[in-house]
Image (tube, rainbow, N blue to C red; front, side, top):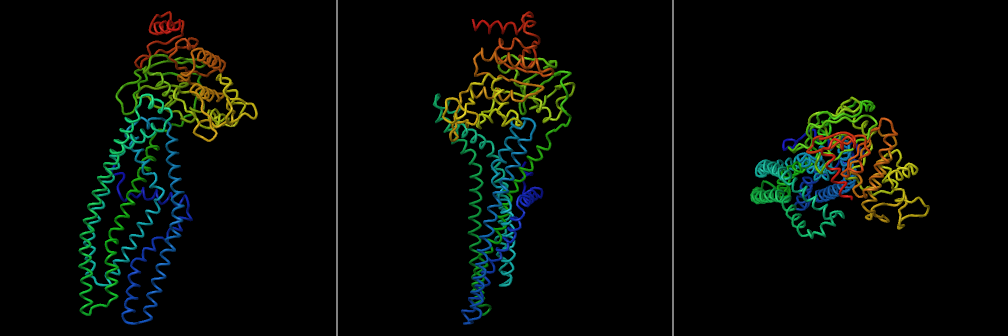
Length: 600
C-alpha cells in the first residue's frame, strides 16, 4: 500500500493534470504563467544591488533603473499572483467537484456490496475520503512545485555570479531533501495508522447527530460514554499524525539553526571581500538577499515536492479505487426468462473477512410463478439468501441458476431491471412524498397515478392525501410535501408510515420477474401484515412467471405461500407447502404450533 502511494508516481501525476485539463482547459492555461513570478525573488536582489550601487556612487541612472526594476518586478509579481490565485481557486473548486463526482460514480457503479463488508477496503476508502479535499488543489500543488524549481534555479544562478564559493551554502541546505523524504514516509505511515481510528470517529460522530440513535443515547444515558469514546478515538486518530508533525518540526528547527550559522559566515565573507576592495555595497546587499533565499531555494522545492507527494498519494488512492472497481467482475449475459425457475445449488456463503459460514450447502428449487416464504430464527440465513438472489454478493461456493443461467454470469443491471424489493432496513428517502415512492421506478418518478396505485396496493392509500390545497402542516401530507423534519416545511412520519412508503416503492415497478419482501412489515401488526402478504401472493399468481419471495418471522402470515423454506443454521431443513410441512411434523410444525399458541 505504501509503495502505491510513493512520490513521483507518474500515473497519479497524469491523473491530476489530465483531470484538470479536461475539467477546465482555459483556466489550466491561465495558471501556467504562475511559476514565472518565482523569478521575482532573485530579481529583487539584483535590482536592490543596482539601486544600492547607484546611491553609493551617486549615479542617478542606476538609481532610477533600480527603482523602476523594483517597481515593475513587485507590480508584475502581485498582479500575476492575484490573477492566478483567483483562477486557481475557481479551478480547484471545479476539479474538486470532478474528483468527488468520479468517486461517487465509481462507488455507485459497484454491482455488489462486498466493499462495505471488507475492512481492508473500508480503510482504503477512509484514506481516500480524508484526502479528497487535496485533489481539488492538485494543479495548484503542481504550479507551486514548478515555481519553487524556477526560483531555485534563478537564486543559484545569481549566487554563483556574486561568488562561486557561496554555492557551498547549498551543501548546508541539501540535507533537507532526504529528511523531507523521510518525513513524507512517516506521514504516509501515520495517515494509514490513523485510518481505523478515523472511521471510529466518523461513526461516533454520526451517532451523536442521529435522531434514531439519539433515543437510545438519552434513555440509556450513554452521552458521556460515547463522548469519552469519541475523545479517545480522536486522540488515537491524531496521535500518529501529531508525532510525525512534531518530528518534522524538530528536524526543521535544527536545520534552521545550522543554516543560520552558515548564512552569517557567508555574509561575513562577502563583507570581508568588500572591505578589501573586491566588491561594493551593492554586492553585500545582493549577497544578503540571495543568501537568505538559498535555504528557501532548496527547502521550498523540497517542501513543494513533499506537498505534491501528499496530493499524489491522494491521486494514487483514487487510482486504486479505479483499479478496484475495474477488477470487480461485470458479466454481460442478458436476463433470461424464468421458465426454468430459480435453483440454489449447494450454495455456501460467508461474508468477506469472516470465517463463519452463514449458509452451508443450501439447496432449493423455486418454480416459475411460485410464491416462496423463507422462515426461521434470527441468524438462520434468510436475509443472506435474499442478498445472494439479488446479486449483492456471490456465493463462496455453489451457484444460483435463474432460468437455467448462472446468476454470476448475468449482467447486474439487466437482472435488477426485472427485480423489485422491499428490505427490512429500507431507506427513509427525505424527498417529497411523491418522489419517496417514485424512486422505486425512475420512469414513474413524476407519475402521480402510478404512485397512487402503488400506495393503494401497499395499503397506504390513506397515508398521502391528493386533496388540492393540502400541504405543509396538514395532518396528512400531500404528494408534494417534503418529508423529513430536518428540512424547511418538512414533516416526519412514524416508523410504520415510512415502512408503508417503502412497501409502495417496492410495488411501483409494474412487471418484475422477481419480487422480494425481506421482513418489510416489522412495524405493522400481524393482521395488517397478513392482509398485505395475501395481496402480494395473489398478485404474484396472476403474473405468470413471476416469483415472489417473502421473508417473515410470523409463520401464520406465510401459510398461503406455494413453498415454505425452513432455514436453520444456514441450511435448508425443510421445504414444502404449509399443509405438507404440518403433516411432516418437523421443525416447521413445531414452530408454527408454538407461535400459533402465543396468539390464543
